[in-house]
Length: 268
Image 1 (cartoon, one colour):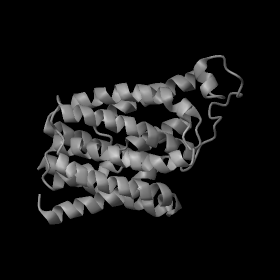
Image 2 (cartoon, rainbow, N blue to C red; image 1 turned 180 degrees about the vertical axis):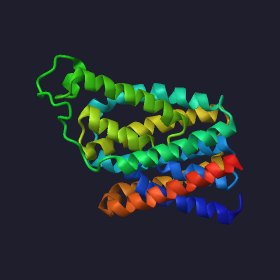
Image 3 (cartoon, rainbow, N blue to C red; image 1 turned 45 degrees about the horizontal axis):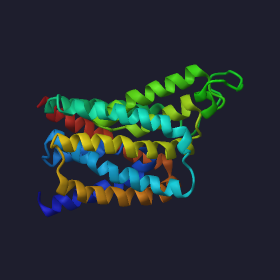
């Protein structure tokens, strides 16, 4: 790959990681851009996932230092994510290149629309309208104030999203954050921190599977991974101070443009 193209990719991965560590969905931009630079579809998905490991670690460190992650509460989420992400990554080997592009395109549009219409900020932790009484189940003791139905739905969505996260990951953290807030009763800040920790395992397990399948471009992945680590580390400190309205506008505009370009390439 020409040096100029590599520099452009590294800068882009850095910038999307600064924003994506909070908003999520940076893979909706980085993977289609890799397509535009002629990187094969499966290799682009796998190498991007390799870089996401660095981003997830870089984004998690500041939250760990601040004590913002409840490791006891997130441990069952991590376990089910390890299993489901491995399943998702294994599926990539059986999917055609054209199907990969189609999945990416559909995911870009769906997650962009989800981001556009969802409410900003944390929802009330009493979304079910039921009193927050003491629960007898182990899960309820970990998640006080949540009924068994809401906890079950939260775990089911976490598992299913883990499959998607291992397969592609575009928009994975964005939707997972919403699930943690809506079904597990987390505040928005707590959910952002928790998804960073969970994503360390999701991206790591998926990367191991991709490495076993021989899909990772290590030279490109290390360079882009370093850029993503730096961007995520910076973003975890400063991105929350940026104007959310403009972040959303830039993100959504970029995603819709890239989605249209990817779909055009598929059609013509």
